[in-house]
Length: 212
Image (tube, rainbow, N blue to C red; front, side, top):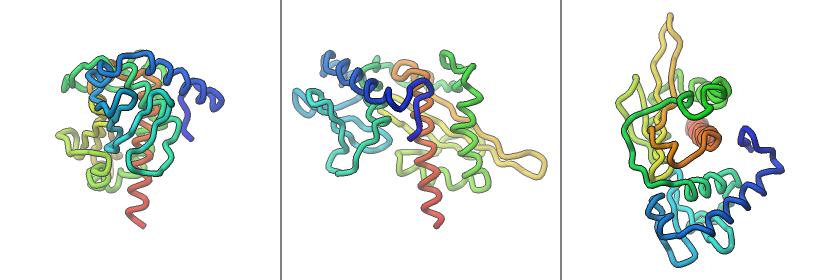
């Protein structure tokens, strides 16, 4: 399991419990309005995360995939809860920022690049045209940056943009991972690391399975 930079494996349960309690203390109608979630009844809401629909049962502190039996990893549950509890309702700005521009991001940026961008370049560097194809499963759409790029709305108001530049004999393949500037209204800097890494490895694993 990929970890939050500053949370040990033992801390995941506590982080989840605290996030559940915070959500239970909020007005669910306001939570839905600010996050783009949809109410099911007075105790449950639904939210799209990486193009899949999740059911959040507030009193029980449970998060499950709607109409699916697959178990939801705890790091995904924490991301969903943090998004719901931190959402401000800020719209997309259509202005992109790098991870280094987030609060505290400059210090952790080398590790962020190693955990996210380097695996992307290793997987898609020689076949960048595969990126838009596999990203469709997660709601991705082509964007107009670099040689190949995609927009992926991980949550209703959180957009990640992956950009690739083709290399040649003299210049290696390059790339970047960008975010709509409003991401700071929904997720902490640590959450952005885990969300990015989660998405990147989903894309890589799908690309590998598609080529087999």
